[in-house]
Image (tube, rainbow, N blue to C red; front, side, top):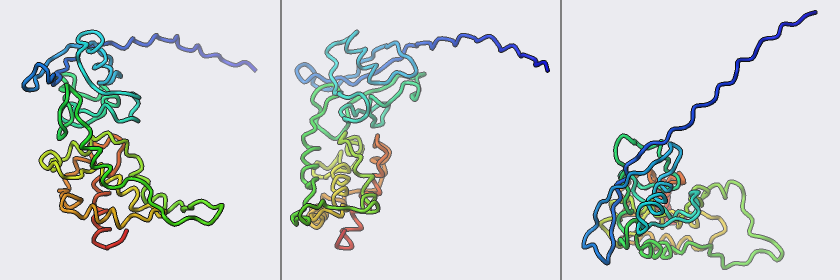
Length: 254
């Protein structure tokens, strides 16, 4: 029995990905020479899959070595490169050029609500002070049975799984209008990290944290604008976590 052989079509070479010029307008500030922040534009040759962080590197390495910003892992884990990109809080290392409107300039500036130090760098100490104030660590005074661990069921672990994802980038807190205007407000990130331990079945410090967050600058300052949830690069349901802490306070227990 004969068989017919079909000729496979000749492979066609893929068209090379084309680069293009993108204009970045960066809000600059050097405390040694500037009385106020100023905007400066840079034209950068980019590819669609490049990230905003790549553009900042190109500017610093090829055009202006004085540009100052934080970055570390470049993979969305350390949270150090949070900044405002086209008016939204994002991580520069996770924001692809192809996901932005490149027909217009891309605006980059430091996150709001924290003291500006230089260019895209802010003083994070007020943010970390609020984080520390909510006692973001396991409090367990009672000892487990000798030779045993503090066990936890899958359901108990799932209760606070979402809020374990926080990387302390401050994107949520610095997107909050209340935080911008009230320097005493704990902010969403601190409340998220309190939530992580308040609902941990192994923890014995929930009442203390709830008392702290019941203060006038605690959860009750939240206005439920959802800015924090939209800004979170880890997809944490921040507003929901704050609501759950409010409910725990009203119930008088976690």
